[in-house]
Image 1 (cartoon, rainbow, N blue to C red):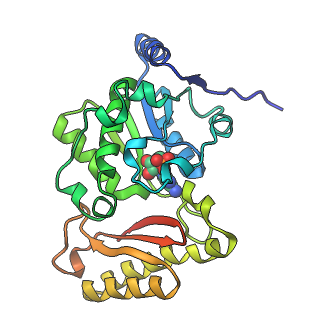
Image 2 (image 1 turned 90 degrees about the vertical axis):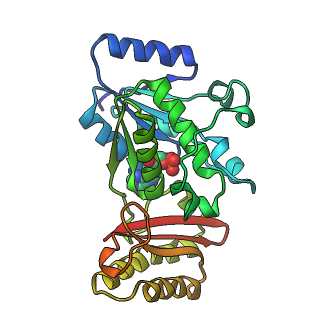
Length: 283
Ligand code: AMP
């Protein structure tokens, strides 16, 4: 059995600083993969994409309190650091595991925030007020702390990816953003840490989201009117016991298309029991 090499676990800002100093002194290009841990094959595909574009791959694992709303979602978010470090063996060079205090020295509530206007008012932003401020703010910190030249994000969180790209453009952040395709289970369900909250019966039903997205994309391609496609998708989810927040067709920049021919992405958010799932499909 070959000896696997675990990534270096960095828990203190000074340790991260030393690691980035060393990488930069050696002329290595740093690639960052921000995560909240509980790693699955989707996350690992991002790490592989970072490896293709960087010489020193840093994965951050931080369950960021400022991007969660009320309701205990932050407390019950799965934390599996040991398994995550094992999964990253031979894949990442270092893992950044900051405490909440390291990330927010003056407390999360008192922290400087980054707000991306417009894009964050719709869809996820409308259903999770403040969520994207938390995301943009923590990602800015991670960019600054890691001094990465490239960072990889999943298309699974399509709106998040757009928000990060806009933020980087607006702030002239010296970093390249790479998007990685969504990794799915055999029935089409997008891999997600939240899938672990589904019971067996809910898990069997969850594949419907991807089928609904595929049907929306097909209907848009066929030129069906957008309101009709969206209404049918909402009805299909509701009648299968989901509580959908939205099922919409949008342009790639998330603006509203004038007609079916302009729809470039289908997006769904729906609750199944206590678990809220999001997914999307490019058309
Ligand atoms: P999270 O740990 O959920 O914050 O996700 C960390 C990163 O992994 C984000 O850029 C996500 O978009 C990405 N990600 C999550 N699930 C998947 C998936 N199934 N396929 C590809 N990327 C994913």
